[in-house]
Image (cartoon, rainbow, N blue to C red):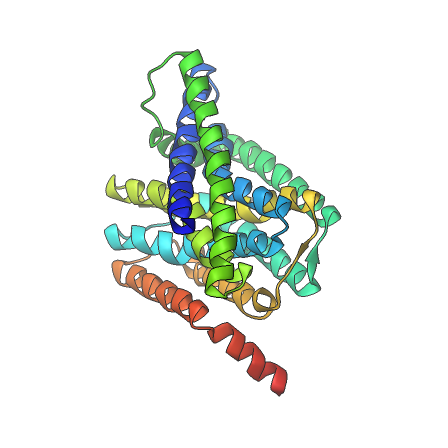
Length: 333
C-alpha cells in the first residue's frame, strides 16, 4: 500500500505542479504582467512548489533528513538526470547573457549550502538570510535585464522567459476558471506531498534505509518531475536553452527558498552521509556546468548520456550502501 500511495502522491505532485503553473501563467496574462517577471517568479517558483510542499510536510512530520536529502538530491537530479535527458533529445546550448550571472549565483549558493551542511545544521537565522538573498537576486535580475534591454534594444532575458511562459500557455478559461485551476493545483500538491512523505518514511523503515537515502532518491526524483517535463518539452520544441535556464532557476529556488522557508519551521540538521558524500556530489555536478556557463558551448548528446550514466551509478550506489562503507573506511583511518 505504501508503494501505491507513493505513486499516487507522485502523480498528484506532477499534475498539481502543472495545474498550478498553468493557472498562474493564465492569471498573469489576464493581468498583463510582463512575461520576463512571470518567468523569473511564477515559472521558477511554481515548478519548485512540489519540493517546497514535501519539505514542509517532512519538517512537520519530524523527518528533517528528507528535507535536506530532497533538496540536495533534487539539485543532483536536475543536472544529471533532467539536463542529461534534455541533451540526449537535443544538445543544450547556453544563452551567455542569461546564464553567466545566474550560473555564478548558483555556484555561490551551492557553496554556501555546502558550508552550512559542514556546519551541521541549518538554523532559522540562516534561512532568513537565504530567502532575503533570493529576493535581492530576483529583483536585481529583473532590473538589470530591463536596463540592458533598453541599452541594446534587445531583451534576451525576456525572450527566454517568454519561451518558458509559452510552454505553460493554453488555458483559455476566464479569470475565475484560471483561479480554480490554480487552486486545484495547490490542493493536489498538498495532498500528494502528504501521501508521498508518509509513504516514503514507511518505505524507508521497511527497506532498512535512512530517510536521507529516500529523500535523495525517491523524493528527489518525484519532485523533479515538473522540471523534467518542462525541459524535455522545451528540447523537443527546439528551445534547449530553456532547459538550462529552468534547471539553474530551480536549483537556486531549492537552496534559497525551500530550505529557507523550511528552516523557519524547524532547524534542519545534516545527516553524516549528506555531510561527507552527497553534498559533494551536488557540488561536483554544479561545477561540471562551469565550462558550459563560461564558454556557452553545448551539452552534447554524448555528454547527456554520460550525465544519465553518472546519475544511474549514483542512485545504485546509494542503495548498495556505498556512501556508508566509504564513511566507515574514512572513520577507521
